[in-house]
Length: 267
Image (cartoon, rainbow, N blue to C red; front, top):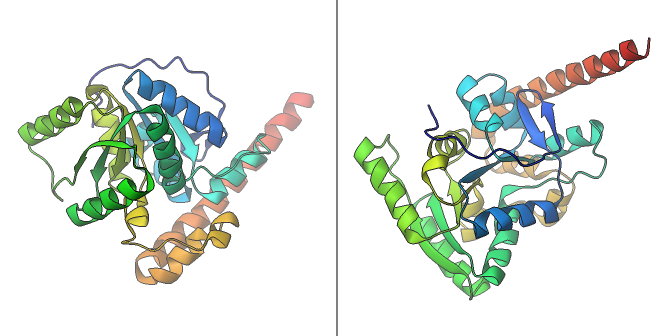
């Protein structure tokens, strides 16, 4: 897994390491403004959204860790990751989650006249999503959607995909391939695409209505994971049991080492 071309990495970031990932502290307004700025110039950038599964996986998978570390922005998706940033000196940090970031930015893109492209999920989900977006954002310029095959692409197929995206004129590409596939895909392809890539996980399915999202009160109280566990217990129980435990152990160790370092610096 290799990114082909260097990118401008000069942006000043407020970030902290959380287990295997470096996560940015920022507000919703800052996130939207930064995407708008990059998209207006069609800069080759990519944005990751980190939850507990992401930061734990980054501590175990070197390729995924590289993809996260090389991102131009890495926002705290999961409530525990936002909480961790609050413990590390950013008391007002909110959760910046994929579905809401996508929806908020579509409103901004509609206002600014920016073109968007949707990459990932299934043809059926993308078709439903386009209908819903046309109703919700009548001025939004959607220049393309594409559902890649569920297999590795040949080099020729890969080049055709990139050419299609670039020829569309899109300035923002929403990527819905699931973690860690979407982060690795963005890392490899970012420098070849003249647009901002944003990995949004299952956002296409949520907004298309093919997967039901947790009630708003659960989202606001950081309980969306519990709702997902209740709807997909067989698939998620083992993952949550392992990753949540590893997160608690790993971040507790990080906090203790941080406190010890501060104590020693005072002695």
